[in-house]
Amino acid sequence: MQLTRLDRWLRERFVYETHIYTLRPPEELPPGMISEDLPETPGRRFRHRFIARKPELATSLIESLKGNNMMFTTRVVDRSAWYVPLIAPKDKSITYWFVWTIISAAGVFGIAAGLRALWAQPGIRENVIDAFQVIQG
Image (cartoon, rainbow, N blue to C red):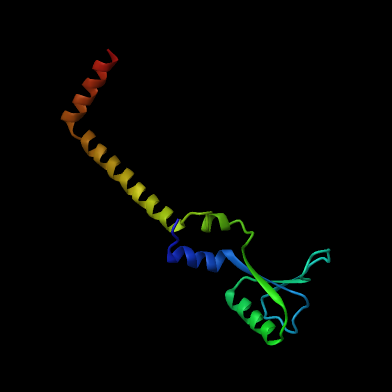
């Protein structure tokens, strides 16, 4: 499904986080970065992972790594938080979901108001009651 600007902003702000993998830790980390040492296993290329929840933090760390000529790789992944499926459902737009919910609620309200107005008229009410009596036998 097509994502709206609001959907993209919600995902960038609250869902995505940047993982930056390096061979050795940088000399200086921006405040707010989460640092993890990865276990040494055969076939693993990188030993350190830095998690940036804000794009500005990731950009500043990447610039620092480039300035120090350090090898690194980045991955953008979804956070593992309880609210992620609510904000960013898989292959769906939350904006369109809200729009269709509001349109459906307005339609149900309109139909209910119309039926109530019809039921308030005594002639129609008598005809409906007579029809149910005929149907019941």
